[in-house]
Image (cartoon, rainbow, N blue to C red; front, side, top):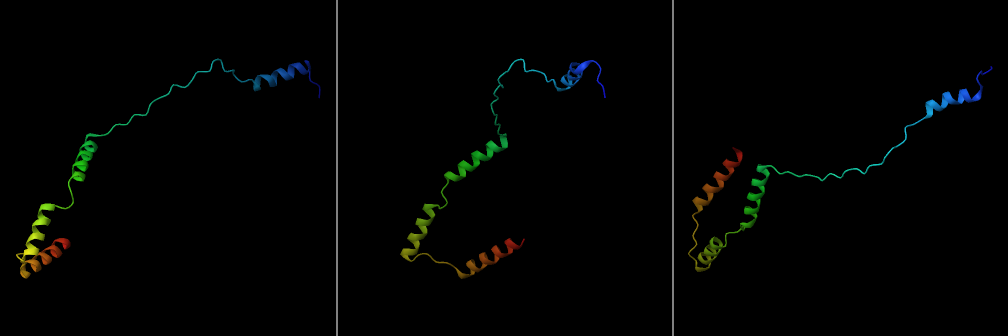
Length: 95
């Protein structure tokens, strides 16, 4: 097979397909800062959680009153009241 126009003509055709655009200028990417937004419900929730954490789990004054009654022998519990509360708690769990 003969190629007319010489090798340079053929190489120009292939060169056109291989050409890539040059990078003119290099720009630095603009840094973006992350943004965090908290909803009003979440803020209210955080406030309530902080308030609940500050409340002690044990009410010292009630415990001390019961200890004092127990030690002096004046702490009396009615068996019927205890049984009623146990039954009520069982019924409440089933409902």
